[in-house]
Image 1 (cartoon, helix red, strand yellow):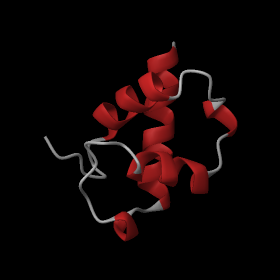
Image 2: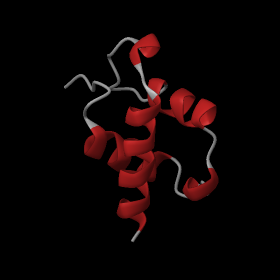
Image 3: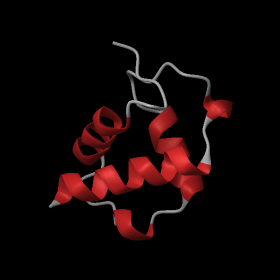
Length: 66
């Protein structure tokens, strides 16, 4: 499976497993972008992300922590 920017929930799940100690509420979008693009299953164009997509990933990641 190749993750795309719109796979918000699956990306959030993988990030929560890979970075369990990250303070997600205060993560910078530059760091979040790097984390997403470094996921083994990520296969989308890194330059195609938007602030809205990164925010959605951040919110889903926060939900995963609850």
